[in-house]
Image (cartoon, rainbow, N blue to C red; front, side, top):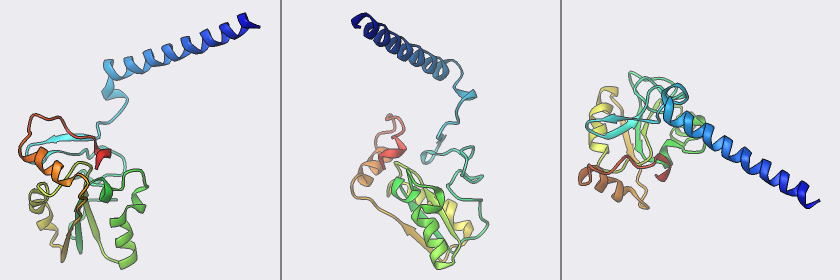
Length: 161
């Protein structure tokens, strides 16, 4: 009985090691063949969402398509982006549905108040009637600090907010 348990346990451990090895190889040898980077480098914003991510428009924002005009443009971080919810359940898309307006979402995790003036230049051609800037006081001031003062810091995790 003990010998049989030992074999099962050893097989389980070897299986985990094998899976870890395959995942490590996948990530280090050819990552471009397996996944699309979530963010791309942007000279002004530091980073921005990648347009190649499914569910993102040609500009990289989480919209069904890149609009020419919008009634409302929304700036924000992961709360506005809608991390862990389907795109149609993010609050900017709900606003569009409920108010029957065209809403263009320009939000991404790690963005904060210092990003919004930069995004304003991108939003102006859409000729919005209203621009909403969503703030999360839990970390938006830190996000602003990272953009302005700490250029050496790597891109924050989008799930951090």
